[in-house]
Image 1: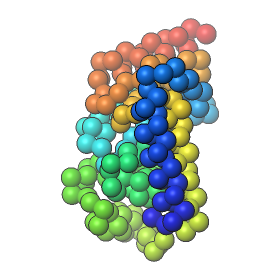
Image 2: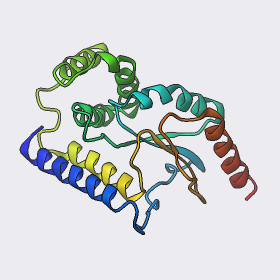
Image 3: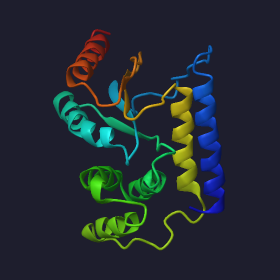
Image 4: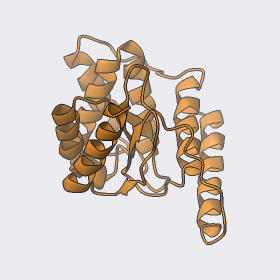
Length: 205
Protein backbone atom coordinates (compact mmCIF):
# COMPACT_ATOMS: atom_id res chain seq x y z
CA UNK A 1 0.00 0.00 0.00
CA UNK A 2 1.54 3.35 -1.03
CA UNK A 3 1.59 6.44 1.20
CA UNK A 4 -1.40 8.06 -0.49
CA UNK A 5 -3.47 4.91 -0.12
CA UNK A 6 -2.40 4.55 3.51
CA UNK A 7 -3.57 8.09 4.24
CA UNK A 8 -6.92 7.41 2.57
CA UNK A 9 -7.31 4.15 4.47
CA UNK A 10 -6.43 5.75 7.82
CA UNK A 11 -9.03 8.42 7.12
CA UNK A 12 -11.58 5.71 6.40
CA UNK A 13 -10.80 3.97 9.68
CA UNK A 14 -11.30 7.23 11.52
CA UNK A 15 -14.60 7.82 9.75
CA UNK A 16 -15.77 4.30 10.59
CA UNK A 17 -15.00 4.88 14.26
CA UNK A 18 -16.80 8.21 14.13
CA UNK A 19 -19.86 6.54 12.64
CA UNK A 20 -19.87 4.05 15.48
CA UNK A 21 -19.73 6.85 18.04
CA UNK A 22 -22.64 8.61 16.34
CA UNK A 23 -24.75 5.50 15.89
CA UNK A 24 -27.08 6.49 18.72
CA UNK A 25 -27.76 9.90 17.21
CA UNK A 26 -30.00 10.93 14.37
CA UNK A 27 -27.52 10.40 11.56
CA UNK A 28 -29.10 10.69 8.11
CA UNK A 29 -28.97 7.50 6.07
CA UNK A 30 -28.42 7.99 2.36
CA UNK A 31 -29.13 5.00 0.11
CA UNK A 32 -29.59 7.06 -3.04
CA UNK A 33 -26.41 5.58 -4.53
CA UNK A 34 -27.84 2.05 -4.48
CA UNK A 35 -29.49 1.36 -7.81
CA UNK A 36 -29.83 -1.49 -10.32
CA UNK A 37 -27.40 -1.33 -13.24
CA UNK A 38 -28.69 0.12 -16.47
CA UNK A 39 -31.25 -2.15 -18.12
CA UNK A 40 -32.18 -4.02 -14.92
CA UNK A 41 -35.33 -3.38 -12.89
CA UNK A 42 -34.28 -5.39 -9.82
CA UNK A 43 -30.78 -6.22 -8.53
CA UNK A 44 -28.86 -7.36 -5.49
CA UNK A 45 -26.35 -4.84 -4.11
CA UNK A 46 -23.93 -6.51 -1.71
CA UNK A 47 -21.32 -4.70 0.39
CA UNK A 48 -18.63 -7.31 0.97
CA UNK A 49 -15.20 -7.84 2.47
CA UNK A 50 -13.04 -10.40 0.69
CA UNK A 51 -11.43 -11.46 3.99
CA UNK A 52 -14.78 -11.86 5.78
CA UNK A 53 -15.76 -15.51 6.49
CA UNK A 54 -19.46 -14.58 6.58
CA UNK A 55 -19.13 -13.15 3.07
CA UNK A 56 -17.64 -16.42 1.85
CA UNK A 57 -20.44 -18.33 3.57
CA UNK A 58 -23.07 -16.12 1.94
CA UNK A 59 -21.64 -16.51 -1.57
CA UNK A 60 -23.67 -19.67 -2.46
CA UNK A 61 -26.89 -17.92 -1.43
CA UNK A 62 -26.14 -14.89 -3.59
CA UNK A 63 -25.23 -17.10 -6.55
CA UNK A 64 -28.43 -19.10 -6.09
CA UNK A 65 -30.51 -15.91 -6.04
CA UNK A 66 -28.86 -14.60 -9.21
CA UNK A 67 -29.50 -17.90 -11.00
CA UNK A 68 -33.08 -18.34 -9.76
CA UNK A 69 -34.33 -14.83 -10.45
CA UNK A 70 -32.04 -13.87 -13.35
CA UNK A 71 -31.01 -10.58 -11.76
CA UNK A 72 -27.59 -8.91 -11.51
CA UNK A 73 -25.38 -9.00 -8.45
CA UNK A 74 -23.62 -5.67 -7.88
CA UNK A 75 -20.63 -6.19 -5.58
CA UNK A 76 -19.51 -3.17 -3.60
CA UNK A 77 -16.24 -2.82 -1.69
CA UNK A 78 -16.36 -2.61 2.11
CA UNK A 79 -13.03 -3.97 3.39
CA UNK A 80 -13.10 -3.79 7.17
CA UNK A 81 -10.13 -2.09 8.87
CA UNK A 82 -9.38 -5.09 11.10
CA UNK A 83 -8.82 -7.36 8.08
CA UNK A 84 -5.18 -6.93 7.15
CA UNK A 85 -5.24 -8.09 3.52
CA UNK A 86 -8.80 -7.21 2.53
CA UNK A 87 -8.06 -3.76 1.12
CA UNK A 88 -5.31 -5.07 -1.18
CA UNK A 89 -7.59 -7.91 -2.32
CA UNK A 90 -10.26 -5.37 -3.26
CA UNK A 91 -7.73 -3.32 -5.22
CA UNK A 92 -6.82 -6.50 -7.09
CA UNK A 93 -10.52 -7.12 -7.75
CA UNK A 94 -10.70 -3.68 -9.36
CA UNK A 95 -7.61 -4.47 -11.42
CA UNK A 96 -9.00 -7.74 -12.76
CA UNK A 97 -12.43 -6.19 -13.39
CA UNK A 98 -10.67 -3.54 -15.47
CA UNK A 99 -9.47 -6.30 -17.78
CA UNK A 100 -12.99 -7.73 -17.98
CA UNK A 101 -16.01 -7.73 -15.64
CA UNK A 102 -16.11 -11.53 -15.81
CA UNK A 103 -12.49 -11.80 -14.70
CA UNK A 104 -13.20 -9.49 -11.79
CA UNK A 105 -16.16 -11.64 -10.77
CA UNK A 106 -14.05 -14.78 -10.98
CA UNK A 107 -11.45 -13.18 -8.70
CA UNK A 108 -14.09 -12.66 -5.99
CA UNK A 109 -15.07 -16.33 -6.20
CA UNK A 110 -11.44 -17.44 -6.28
CA UNK A 111 -10.62 -15.49 -3.13
CA UNK A 112 -13.66 -16.81 -1.27
CA UNK A 113 -12.75 -20.38 -2.26
CA UNK A 114 -9.16 -19.92 -1.04
CA UNK A 115 -9.83 -17.50 1.82
CA UNK A 116 -8.58 -19.77 4.68
CA UNK A 117 -5.17 -20.10 3.00
CA UNK A 118 -4.63 -16.44 2.16
CA UNK A 119 -2.74 -14.00 4.35
CA UNK A 120 -1.15 -10.61 3.74
CA UNK A 121 2.13 -12.21 2.65
CA UNK A 122 0.64 -14.86 0.36
CA UNK A 123 -2.01 -12.69 -1.31
CA UNK A 124 0.34 -11.60 -4.09
CA UNK A 125 1.20 -15.23 -4.87
CA UNK A 126 -2.48 -16.15 -5.07
CA UNK A 127 -3.09 -13.21 -7.41
CA UNK A 128 -0.20 -14.28 -9.63
CA UNK A 129 -1.56 -17.84 -9.75
CA UNK A 130 -5.03 -16.54 -10.63
CA UNK A 131 -3.63 -14.31 -13.38
CA UNK A 132 -1.55 -17.17 -14.80
CA UNK A 133 -4.61 -19.45 -14.86
CA UNK A 134 -6.30 -16.88 -17.08
CA UNK A 135 -3.35 -16.31 -19.40
CA UNK A 136 -2.27 -13.05 -17.79
CA UNK A 137 0.88 -11.78 -16.14
CA UNK A 138 0.33 -9.71 -13.02
CA UNK A 139 2.29 -6.44 -13.21
CA UNK A 140 4.60 -5.52 -10.37
CA UNK A 141 2.34 -2.58 -9.53
CA UNK A 142 -1.35 -3.07 -10.25
CA UNK A 143 -2.35 0.42 -9.12
CA UNK A 144 0.60 2.78 -9.69
CA UNK A 145 -1.52 5.96 -9.61
CA UNK A 146 -3.80 4.92 -6.73
CA UNK A 147 -6.95 5.13 -8.87
CA UNK A 148 -8.16 1.64 -7.99
CA UNK A 149 -7.61 2.27 -4.28
CA UNK A 150 -9.59 5.51 -4.60
CA UNK A 151 -12.46 3.59 -6.24
CA UNK A 152 -12.47 1.12 -3.33
CA UNK A 153 -12.63 4.07 -0.93
CA UNK A 154 -15.53 5.58 -2.89
CA UNK A 155 -17.49 2.36 -2.30
CA UNK A 156 -16.43 2.38 1.35
CA UNK A 157 -17.83 5.88 1.82
CA UNK A 158 -21.02 5.01 -0.06
CA UNK A 159 -21.48 2.14 2.39
CA UNK A 160 -20.98 4.43 5.38
CA UNK A 161 -23.55 6.89 4.04
CA UNK A 162 -25.99 3.98 3.64
CA UNK A 163 -25.47 2.98 7.27
CA UNK A 164 -23.50 -0.17 6.51
CA UNK A 165 -21.32 -1.45 9.35
CA UNK A 166 -21.34 -5.24 8.81
CA UNK A 167 -20.32 -7.53 6.00
CA UNK A 168 -21.97 -8.83 4.06
CA UNK A 169 -24.74 -6.24 4.01
CA UNK A 170 -27.12 -7.06 1.19
CA UNK A 171 -29.80 -4.82 -0.30
CA UNK A 172 -32.38 -5.80 -2.87
CA UNK A 173 -33.02 -2.74 -5.02
CA UNK A 174 -35.40 -1.92 -7.82
CA UNK A 175 -35.85 1.11 -10.03
CA UNK A 176 -38.48 2.24 -7.53
CA UNK A 177 -37.42 0.97 -4.09
CA UNK A 178 -34.57 -0.10 -1.80
CA UNK A 179 -35.25 -2.71 0.87
CA UNK A 180 -33.97 -2.73 4.41
CA UNK A 181 -30.62 -4.56 4.44
CA UNK A 182 -30.06 -8.24 5.10
CA UNK A 183 -26.87 -8.28 7.16
CA UNK A 184 -24.08 -10.77 7.82
CA UNK A 185 -24.77 -14.38 6.80
CA UNK A 186 -27.59 -13.99 4.30
CA UNK A 187 -30.88 -15.74 5.04
CA UNK A 188 -32.05 -17.44 1.86
CA UNK A 189 -35.77 -17.24 2.63
CA UNK A 190 -35.66 -13.55 3.53
CA UNK A 191 -33.53 -12.65 0.53
CA UNK A 192 -35.65 -14.61 -1.93
CA UNK A 193 -38.86 -13.14 -0.51
CA UNK A 194 -37.52 -9.61 -0.94
CA UNK A 195 -36.56 -10.29 -4.54
CA UNK A 196 -39.96 -11.78 -5.34
CA UNK A 197 -41.72 -8.83 -3.71
CA UNK A 198 -39.81 -6.24 -5.71
CA UNK A 199 -40.08 -8.20 -8.95
CA UNK A 200 -43.84 -8.41 -8.43
CA UNK A 201 -44.09 -4.69 -7.78
CA UNK A 202 -42.06 -3.71 -10.84
CA UNK A 203 -43.93 -6.17 -13.07
CA UNK A 204 -47.27 -4.62 -12.13
CA UNK A 205 -46.24 -1.17 -13.38
